[in-house]
Length: 360
Image (cartoon, rainbow, N blue to C red):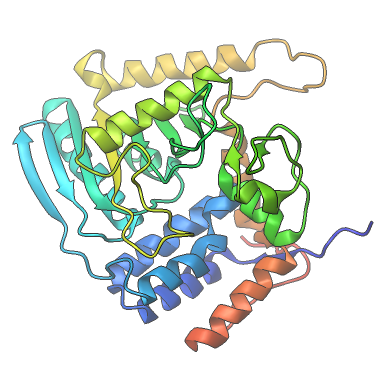
């Protein structure tokens, strides 16, 4: 069976395309640019499920008034190190970036900062906000929740979300630590991508509506996701709901709106924690010790089938470098989607190449 063609897009062009569309939908220029950069960053890091492929659905929701294009974000001080952010039903990218910004501000002054948020929406790739903290030299933890897509361990009906848990820590000369993982075997975006492209999914990723393992992506979309490690994935999903839903005043326990199936605000919750390492040891010592940890991980003898041992976040780091040289790869289904959006909203089409680019 012949492989489907690939199209390559300059990341800078992708940002302009997304920003133009979002501005057309009524977002302020700075919000449109921030969101466009977040989406392209996800594609560059290989998290294609949370990149430009989501843009059409975001455009539909904001155009239909289900997301507030111009939210009035409101920060409530709780203690010197803690605050709450009301997202006013804005895009999760905008709310989450502000939430981490507020956590960082407190951590830089007091050593730690924690900010909860409610009345938000899907915020894309969890690592986006970890990277925001890493740029300031801070350790971070990021929590969010989502619509019910997975049963608790031992259950049949869906109740839990599968949003990712993300964490990060800076290094000196080596790659930083970046963990961005869903409590399910795979992110549901991978199921959507397979369904869009007409591809099968591996057994073990998801179940059909009757709770049976399936290779049919379309059946999986109407079924449920498989938790990673059984009770462990279920437990992590519940922790995510506690930290981002119960604690923040957002929807939780199966109440979060489904952005794909329900015409109502999601009321997603988030929680951002930023920590300044030099509260405990000097910033330079912490980064040097992190370098040592990275080097020790790299120094472990590879198991059979592996050529090297990588640090969490390192595959995405390498892919980011490659894709910013060669362009972001998309399939026919995504190209058709972009062309359709261009016509529907009256913006210039996204320029694509059928061969990898050679960007400086």
